[in-house]
Image 1 (tube, one colour):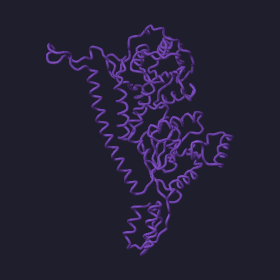
Image 2: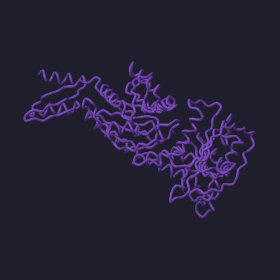
Image 3: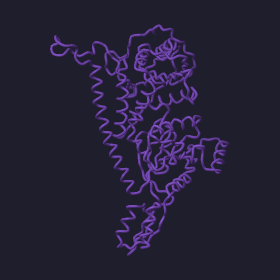
Image 4: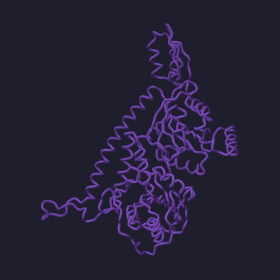
Length: 483
């Protein structure tokens, strides 16, 4: 195969031949990994890019999307390939080749058939590929065998997403959560067992058996670090719980944004709150959660929270690691599910987000807190946009409950969204306009403790308030006035 042109990606679909039980021929590992003397292993399951600094040439990558004959997915292979390519580009990899590999029967040792493995090795050699990305979970054995056969570093979808998260996390909390997920993943990848990794025997080596091997030491050190990380994250979880309690005491409702990565959550967050959170047309552009206060049309104030984006086949370890952050979603008064309505796989993305919400014990199809925000309507064709507007003019909802169509970038539909949020948060509430003597501190304190003060004007001897109370507190206060 001829050498690749710069940054040119070729898409080829081919049938994978099947193994007949014979071992796949392997080549001796030739790449070095962080100075290790035998780099063909996948003991840590991580890969460090070394071609992105000091003007060095970019890392050349091959993206492989396995399509299993018995696999069931709502996405087409082409859509999966496009997303995998986008994930690679999110960390500045130069994807010089991309393939769709059909697999009739997965091989336990390499996932692919022998012919496909040889084809991967040929592409690596012909095009100077440094990294092979397999858009599918790989077992440690499969990863190591592919590395030996291709003489190149191999990472699976989970490893790639962890790499992106590790680069994008900026806050201390985000870095802790990503490190916990990465270490949990790495612990399952400790497969090296060469004799040179065995430490010296106990004592002088004459009595007893071998001492602690390197793999046992690595497992122990990783286990200890995981324990420390869980302890620190538990402290952060308690801090978040205190913040939520403070908001609840102040009667400040929480609105949480969730959605598929690159659905436009951060752009919507900025448009509603006036914040300057980084937003870019890129997968996982932002990771760190952010909370800002917004003011609704009635004057009611609410806290708006931007959360990490979801993606198909999101590693379970990431969901577990980010549980402290995602608890904000569980405790939210309203959950805005932001969807890219212009994306061809919008429905499949909706299912992926609802699956993750299900892991958080939130049934998106039945939970009245969930509102779908159909974003990026400005990218729809005139026909599709008109059909969407007609549907919302009739009932203002989708088959999955309440919904509103917006373009966060163009500012279209945001007023409708704010009015909808106002109505939802006002359900079961009473708005009162009161004129309280300035000397009646007890009544003022009670109103601040039990309601949400929307507006206050202090005059010479009076305090004029607009207060929102729930039905029970409204009845108690009304009886207090009557007395």
